Length: 298
Image (tube, rainbow, N blue to C red; front, side, top):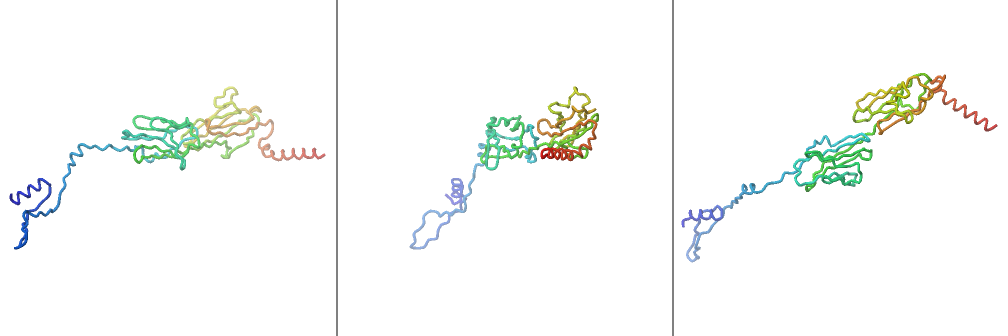
């Protein structure tokens, strides 16, 4: 076999690049080295990558579809709100919602099952891939962080912060100052203004009551009118009562549904100047107390 044949045979058997055999030098008296001495230059390893790729398929990882800008959600006190969690390529993984309060973690849902003892929480899955958490009758204590988790290793987490807005309701005078008492002369028109603010969505659900009687749709008394207009973050509602009489005195309440309310005491006076009554209210009380004290001493 020639050296060239040996090289070819070596390459075929070991996939090792070989060089031609070199016969060692020998001298008289030294042992003759029978056979070639091989020097390996390098070994090149070939892998059947194409075969492996054709037989092995990697499973796609799940990912969240929702934009990070939706990680903050605002809800009005007493309303219902959905926290969204859209997941692609979920595969055999499971979705869970948890509530995080500092170091405490409370499981709310796992898969399509709700695990919270609070019945206001529930999973409201929406096709095709929205694992929504529903919170009904939102309260101030619901504000905080919520996490939608995918059961990968490690888990994939989407955090949502819920902000609960408490509406502000005020009955104000002509200058926009809050009122506690309002005086009217008998036969005049009662006009009360109620400003609702801190409302995420415009609302017309403003109710007026005199005592326990709802005035918005009152037809029994007559001359009662309620006009409400929406504002960018709330509403302005006006109550008008024509030809005021003594029976119209009492507490008037302005409320936004059942979420927030405020009240004012209305006094309808007969034959007296309301402004003079308001200015002299303190002096009249002081005079009465002084007379009572004198009579007690004597």
